[in-house]
Image (cartoon, rainbow, N blue to C red; front, side):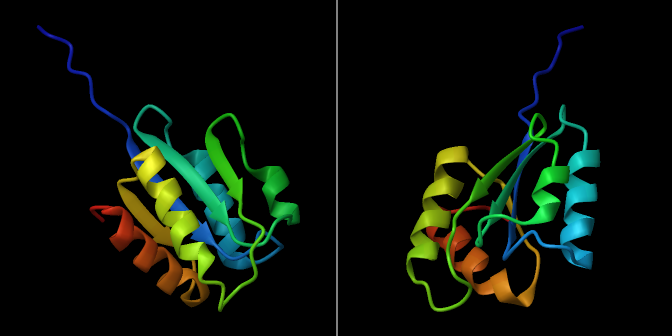
Length: 114
């Protein structure tokens, strides 16, 4: 029987910050628990820093701190789109209404399928 090689599903999790909060804590729990043989997780944080970043398993999860302000920063669209293209992201998962527009537009520009 031939062994089938399957490419891991690449997921970009887009969030505004990583300070203590429910959705941020949920994202950390999610990315740390996902099996790395199936999923490749990328966390893109608009604001650099945040206590919850210390809990992310950096051996399993790629983290990019963009250091941008929330809302009104047009360069965030191109930065995210470049990262999505570079890593060949399959799914963009926005974490809140505050990152939905940026994540969705950047995914469309980059040609992310989901």
